[in-house]
Length: 291
Image (cartoon, rainbow, N blue to C red):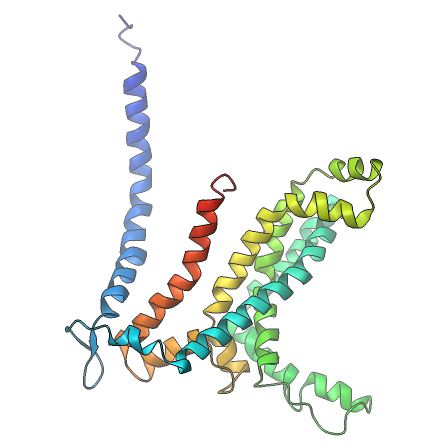
C-alpha cells in the first residue's frame, strides 16, 4: 500500500501526459487552422475547374495537372531548380568559411560578428531587394565605378538578368546558411583536428576527413533553409529579373492575382510543395538518427 499523500507511478505518468497534451493543444489548433486546412483547400482546389470570370467551379478534373506536362511550365520549373541550386551552392561556399571564421574568434567578438550577419533582417526584404536596382542599374554603383575607372565604354546590362536574380537570392538568403553552420561549428570539438594533425594529416585532409563530415548536419540544415525559399521565390525574380527571368513563384503569383486561375495556381503550388518535400522526406527516412 502506498501512503495517502503519495501517488502511484502510473497516475504520475498519466498526469504528465495530460499536462503535455494541454500544452500542445494551442499549437495543434494553430497548425490545424493556419497550416493544415489551407493546404487541404489548395489540394482540393487543384482538382477543380476555373470559373468563367475567375473563381472556382466545383467540377472535378485533372486538366490542371495535365497542363504541367507542357514544356513551357517544365522549363520554368527547370530554371527555378537551377537558380535555387546555384544559390544554395554559392551560399554554402561563402557561408562555410565565414561561419568558421566567426567560431574561431574570441568569444567577445562572436556576438558582434553574428550581429553583423543578422543586421539585414532589420530591414524589410522588399526594400533590400529594391536597393539592388540602385547597385546594378545602368547608372548604378557598379557601372559608375567601372566607368570612372575607364574600364567600360558603355554600361553593362546587369539588371533584369539571371545574374541579378542570383545576386539578389544569395544576398537575401545567405544568413540562413551562416547561422546553422555556426551553430554546428560552435559545438565542434577542435581537439579532433589537433589529433588528426598529430597523426600526420595536413590542413586539407584534416578539414575533409574530420571537420566536414562532423558538420554535415549544419550543411544540410542550411541548404534546406536556403533552397526552399529560393526555389519558390517571386519577389527577387520579379524585381531584379523583370520579364526575362520567370520562376515558379512568379508563375503561381500570376495565376492567382492576374489570370485568376486559382485551380491551376493551386496545382502549381502542390507540385512545388512535392518537389521540395519529397527529397527531404526521403533523406530523413534514410537517416533517421541524424535528427
